[in-house]
Length: 324
Image 1 (spheres, rainbow, N blue to C red):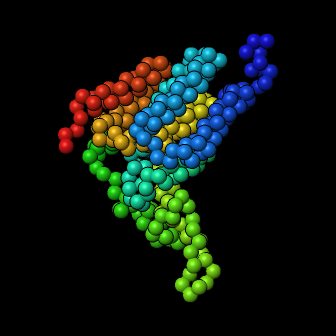
Image 2 (image 1 turned 180 degrees about the horizontal axis):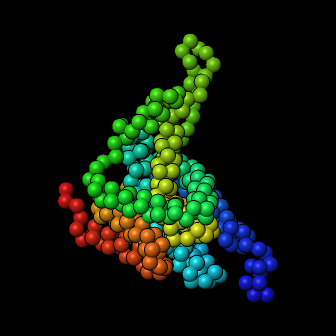
């Protein structure tokens, strides 16, 4: 029996046969078991070499999955996966910058950052499913939303270009100030615990307190929601296929933990990455208007431009490092 016949027999579910979704779910589960069961216990703090190796491994796994999608669904859907993955991975880099600031603000030691990043990714997987579902439903009902998406991406990219040298100041963040005022929280990190029980003055029953580690975890998730507002519309502008949108999102954010330690060590070297991200947002926004007003924009060309922009930014950063 041919593959297409098997697909028809099984019936597609959200853009792909159930068995293809099962492969995806099995891959994600295996990664979690490896990450939580081995890396978290054996290597709580990754070296630069280990971070690069792990980031590469996640990228190879995503590439293998994309090749499988290319072979089964055809080059159009396969190229869409790689385009969406490259876009999500590039936008994740900016998320990593903010993570570094959040950890510094809450004084989270490197050996405890893994726990925050791991559970942050678990929450992000759930939140992205909600974002993709809502985004796809809105786009299906209201085609004009594309223009809002395109305008939003272009404006965001232009703002990024204008504020390249500005530093994130969490002390001035009203949401964080409210968080600190309204949550019972300790001022010390107690191992890897998000919550601890501390006795009240006078010997009363111990009361549950959040630790700065939990505060960092909460703010990291808020940051992911903010970045999802950028990334999900960017991918939805290319395709509304829930299989492509969701799988590309998840494979991109899976490597965030390893990517964080890479970027954290080399953040001063790749000085033009933020410029590349801003340009990509503007480019994707322009493509939205082009496809609605002129005609179809080639997906392979979009993928090529995305990879080329990132490669040029990295190369320029290496050839012209920031002066100290």
